[in-house]
Amino acid sequence: MLEVRNVTAAYRDRWAIQNVSFVLQPGQATNLLGPNGAGKSTLMKVMLGLVPPVSGSILWHNQPFAPHRHRVAYVPQRTVIDWDYPITVQNVVRMGRTRQTGWLRSFSAASNAIAHHALDRVGMADYAHRQIGELSGGQQQRVFIARALAQEADLFFLDEPFAGVDQTTETILFDLFAELKAAGKTLLVISHDFGDTLAHYDQFLLLNQTLIAAGNQSEVICPACLEQAYGKRFYLAAA
Amino acid sequence: MTALLEWLLDPLQFAFMRDALAMGVVLGVLCAVTGSYLIVQQMSMIGGVISHSIVPGLSIAFFLGIDVGIGAFVAGVLSAICVALLEKRSRLKVDAAMSLTLTTFLAFGILLISLLETNQVDLSSLLFGDILGVTRGDLGRTIAIAALIITLVKLFYKELLFYSFDPLGAQASGLPVQGLYMGLISAITLTIVATMQVVGVLLVMALLVGPAITAYLLVKELHQMMWVGSVLGAIASISGMYASYYLDLPSGPAIVMAIFVGFLLALCFSPRRGWLVAKARSPHTPHQ
Image (tube, rainbow over all chains, first blue to last red; front, top):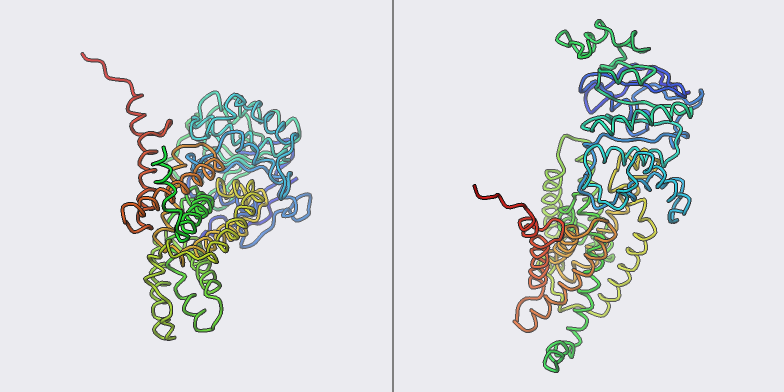
């Protein structure tokens, strides 16, 4: 169980998130929602230790989370990656094995097999020797998900994994979510989709600097909460 | 055949040409390895910043009577830290941070030379250098530095690959990204300091960037970029020096032009990305 308790963080000279508290349970997928600039990515980065919080704490079974951060597999937003980087799909996925391999060592045969299996799970095994820039957006996202799988983590933090992906990728990702949940993994996903895909999540967090609502779909995806988060001009696309 | 052999061997009768050619090959390899990281991190101008920012370090080292290499190394690393801090802790973009750092460090260095009366610092030889003036000591030192840096790159390759491709992901996975950045910057500064006193800023910057970007157009993996870049850098150094010998050209600029010719060829004929190759491949519009 991962608990975020009263976390406040700043971005340069302004508050990014204030007094945010919630709990992530194993075997559940949580959808982190909110308008652009609401602090969703910052919140995820605070949890990952990439941005220091001004106050508050992150706890793993009531202990400080910092020593357990290696349990998290993180998929950053597509926009922060240079897709022209000279690297093949296989080597991107093997990055997920860097920590387990340790310093001054080459990837073991077992790590290579895990990386290959992860690629296979996302339907990308045939692309192992392609340069990452030669793939479509959806295929690139699947490669990053494979890297997260290769890490054999307990928690998966995905920052907008569905941005600009095709239907096949979306289906593969939601099938994987179900498998990971069944295996007792914890998922935190930033997503903007208000359509049918909401059914894949167990918990929703609606954020706009402060946590406006947390709970199941009917508690969070309601007009009053969405208006508070997005403003009066927001209409439910799924309605 | 004999004429060609003679043509190739003739310059080698001079010790200064043998040493200069050896230096060119070592520099070609070393600069392609460190330069590859500059390119993939989109920081190719940091080489220019560091190479101009070492001047205050030279002046202070002369004044204190310590090894100028140490002064230059410290000043070079400080300038790279300044760029990183300005970019991270302010709204400045990296190009603005680089311009400010380069001009300030260089101006401060020139001021120090005047204030501390360290006129022994020969700016023109630093800026333009002369690869034909290489000594055996320079060569030995550069080979040692190249061996050290290439060994370190080999040892930490997978961590540096992760960091340079996805710094956020690398940091989230627990890699010490600041340490890796400092390691890279130290390696680049060491490369520059060790070589620019011998060959000048222009040649160092060209060797750091040119062969690596040429290789970037040709291959699909970072380690291939280093291998191909090394070969290209060495070939450019050798061909530039032969051109310099037979056509009586200044050697440094001749090498830089050889690097550019290699780049131009890759730009036009790269199998996957070449301009002319792409044009030949694109389907013709059928006549109506």
